[in-house]
Structures are given as C-alpha cells and as structure tokens.
Image (cartoon, rainbow, N blue to C red):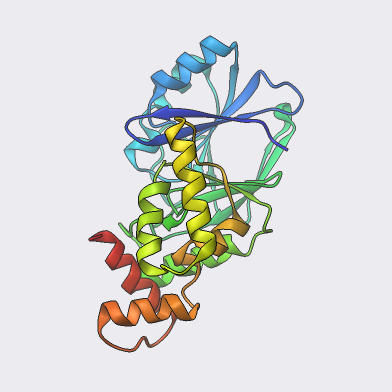
Length: 257
C-alpha cells in the first residue's frame, strides 16, 4: 500500500505526495498548483522531490510546477493534449510512467470531460484522478461533453473496488448534499455522509475514497440506477433517452445546486 501525504492548498485543493516504497523520503507530487506548501512540507519533513505528475492544465494544478522544477530539477509528466509548463514527457492513454528510482509505475488513463486532455494515473491500487472523479461527484464540463465525461467515469468505475481514489479537491460534503437530493433513500450514502462529517469536524481529509464506495454513493456513477433515472426525469420533466441524457441532466442540476 502506497504511503501518501495530502498537502492542502488554496481553499480546498489537495496536492498529493506519493512516497517511494524504497525510500519514504523520496516523493512524487501530483498537481502542484502552488509550490510554497509543497516546499514547506518537503523542508519540514526532510523529503526529496523526485517527480511531478500532472493531470490537466488548470492553474490550481500546474501553478507551482515551474518553481518546483527550478529548485529540484524534477521531471514533469503530463497529458500530451494540453499545455503543461516544463513538461518533459507527454503522456497518452495506455502509456506507462516508470519511476525507477522510486520503485513505482503507473498506467495512464485518458479521461476527457473536465478538460479535453485530462488524464489519470493508476497503479499500486491507487488512482490519482485530478478533477475527473470526486468523492460523491465529478468535475464540471469545461471543455468536454456529457458523453465524454460519462465514458471517462465508466472507465474509472471499472477499476477494482478496493482502488483508493485520490481526488484533487475536498468537495465531499457538498457533493454528498447533492447526492442525497438525487437519491434520498440511499442508505450507503447516508452512512458515508455521517462518516465524512465526522472527519471534517476533526479537520481530517475525507480522501482517499475507494472505487467500491463511489459505485455505491456517487450519482454520476449510478446513471442507470432506477432512483437516479427517476430523479433526472423529475428534474427534466421528461423521459430520459439514455444514460448520457441522465448524466447530462444531473450534471446540469449540480451546476446550479
């Protein structure tokens, strides 16, 4: 099981540090939108930055890349279809990221929707998915279509149930409030909401989640469930043609929730 450290940034971002199984003081960082909290954590904990992994081009995910590269000369891996600062290797679906010095390797999964070229990193039982999949939610569609995002979420939901899901934002409580509006009778959702509230009351992250949990509570992964379909039809005032229509309806609903 990988050792990870969440580095809080901005109002609700997590910049994830991944520790090497060979040397826990050697780390990779995922989506460093701000260099300062990363450097502060590295200095405080006596850690060395080995690699930078980027999922997409938004500023709160890449804003600290150049400063970290200047200080640590770390290689930068990022999506081929997007402009990533200081990128040293462009990644596409099915590529493998082999971090030999750290004893780590990850599979690259294309997951467009939030942005056109968004990717995720999967390996060692962990999924680093940026802003595609959130706990009990998913990212807004800034550049992609509902069909693209629905297909991307299907790919992530097909990973093993025990896969730990490392999202880039602490959105869980607000997402759960919306999920309860979609599925008020979902007992698994209600139990998870109570657990998440307790974690946040203790100022602890709700993340990582798991793929198995998300299948039970995340309405965007449950667009064929009768209760979710019925909620989408009530919202739209008409019958849904297919699963993509259900997804598009509840995504638009969430945007104004």
